[in-house]
Amino acid sequence: MKLLIYSHYFAPSIGGVETIVMSLARGLAELRAENGAQEFEITLVTKTSREDFDDSALPFLVVRRPSFWQLTRLVRGADVVHIAGPALEPVALGLLLRKRVVIEHHGFQVICPTGQLLIESRGEPCPGHFMAGKRAECWKCDPALGWFVSRRLWLLTFVRRYLSKRVAANIMPTSWLGDQLGLPRATTIHHGLVQIESMQKDAMQETRVPVIAFQGRLVSTKGGRVLLDAAKILRDQGMEFSLVFIGDGPERANLEALAKQEPLLGRVRFTGKLTPSELEAELERASVVVVPSLGGEVFGLVVAENMLRGIPVVASDLGSFAEVMGEGGITFRVGDAVELGSKLWDLLQLSSGIQKLAEDGRRRAETQFSSRSMIAKHRNAYRRLSAE
Image (cartoon, rainbow, N blue to C red; front, side):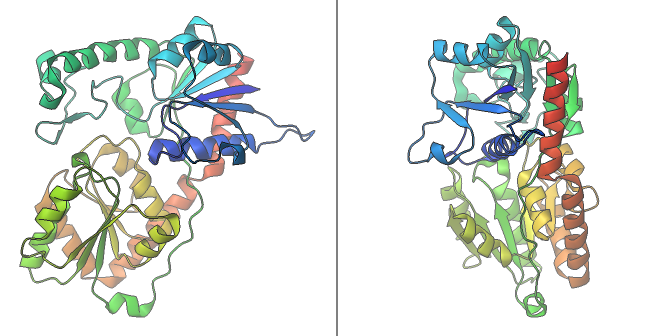
């Protein structure tokens, strides 16, 4: 079967979408029929420049920054077109050429003009203004966008929703997202995790000063300020700890300025971007990983991956996080630094509680989010569509 995978972002760009698309394409390319032939002839199309990335090392063809006519030829030659997110051009081409189009949704672009389901001006989760017809609320959601851009994004949301209702299948990484988007022919396929070694904490580590870790892009929607406010509360209560921010982004300078104030002075580190080996070494020292996102999350790879590592996770109670963690993590109200501080205090005071949470989280991640299961479910979906 000829499968075209379209992802606007791809390696060497780093992010959740890029990680999942790479894992899916690799896994499908490795599948073999009984006669030893590849089950899928995969072409991956992206708008991301190659830079110094070696495309030839991948087990599938990569086409970067194609022209409109080149993309048209690629879509025409495919049996199934898989699109990571409702990108207008490939979706429209696929439907016009009467192809079996599959959209895997990695955001809220069909129900929110900014795709974040977040009121940017206030840093609060959006209750669903677009679907409720509250146009003015969408137009003033992010003042930085300006008059023209805000209305253009609002109009494009109608187009994306119209097209998504007409594709052969809509794939959701969580059932919660499927409920939010409300699209026909929807199915849930959880993201699969690349195998990560569980981190065994030694007895001496339990006696050291706890390390609270944040992992992700340093942008306002990830809730870094909420974590700093919770850390101040812990210090005011007399708790000793260190806090590390793993990642980089436009919010870093602001967070660093806040971290240099008392009572956090000297207790917060910023690592910037790390190599995979550096990341594992840093997380091995972590007592807990906090994911305080304010919105924009449809799955939560950081949540699931650290559960798989055997690190306790405390995350905001977004619907996607709650579904991924189940009983394998702790949640707090979105944006509530006081409750986050309370949950961290209770957890870090009890080493047996940390150990149990780590074990429960690892067990859930191993059983619910395997890469093999993700690939198998995608293969079955493509086969079903091809047969139809």
